[in-house]
Image (cartoon, rainbow, N blue to C red; front, side, top):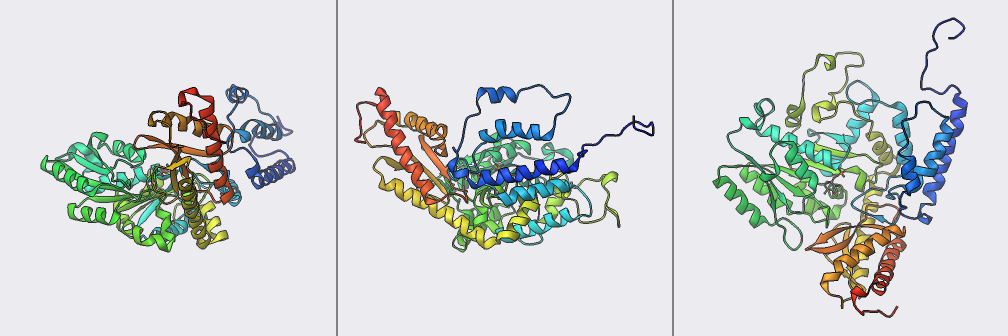
Length: 499
Ligand SMILES: *Cc1c(COP(=O)(O)O)cnc(C)c1O
């Protein structure tokens, strides 16, 4: 009870704002120092059991002061991070983020705008950045789109539009049952598994997804694709969507997009491009030629948290025909009806262009980064990563202990330790052990894949912090560890290299 005898009302705001200033400033100081010295830290440290136990504690009933909670973050959370801020992190395809991006997230989060609906600045920023994205990938300003959590949701969103656009009037009402025949989707065997999720989500089902084999460059085999489309048509099925890759996740391969676009025109199929990695390469003049057909696709999905190094999360989907995007999602709701004036006026809701209604202010970090650095700097950084991949490939080719498993493509290097006189049967196991040790020792974090059944140590360089010395470090340590593993294990034979 307060003095007036009324119940005290509570809020989450600080009682003493000055005290929170100190904690906030401390966080900024700590994170600045942390990122500045990141190279001297291990790339990855496994969360120990006491930390995992701490993170299984019961739901707190009462609270404790923010500085206490922050201390727990410093002790139990920060040291056991994934590591993708580190210059020797090369796993999967992950971006590095930036300190400016973190500050932008703080600003966006302080505003805490919900971009679902309304006439407010964040919506206009989002539109502006979306227009910049259209320009980057060469899409017309009349196209529609939205920012998403990532490439997966961007791809799924595009395929929902593709399905609904197939039969504008009926499919949203009756579902696929209303169609006279089964829809079929085509992609290469190297396609990211979010396309499989998408095909399941839109109700087509993976039995009706044709995964067409790839050639030696890991690009879709066009002859097999054409044959399969003919077979399906003969069987009374409806080929309705073809997915092309602008940069596959395994090897960075770019499918023959021009021929694929041609097939889609001829067969009246929707052409979707998964450009999660490669679409942003369109800012490099030397890639514009091979990516030109991407700009003719009906839809495209890409990630800004990969090659624009944007802090998570930032994916984007664009649909060439804005109207088909709108008609895939628009819903009437009296509580969301636009008004002529007031907060409910303003631009068309992004919920007409995707699945989300409530949406975070994802675009502020992209807007601020592009303002701060300019797109030319990103052009240089992406080119730098590609050069680093080719440099690594050349160093691997020069080393008698290492073997490049596919030609370097874009920013992806797939290789293995192979001193030459070991049987093929042990190489997979040896390289898996080696890859895990590189990570466990905190030296570097590559990931892995299989190339024609061979276990590959795989590096994807979407990292603005990487320098040549980091590449030398992973090469050198791969050789050292490979030799060490052979020495430790009799099963690898009597092979003993001169160290
Ligand atoms: C990363 C990636 C995806 C998935 O994107 P997320 O942002 O992880 O959801 C899809 N396709 C390709 C080719 C990718 O590299």
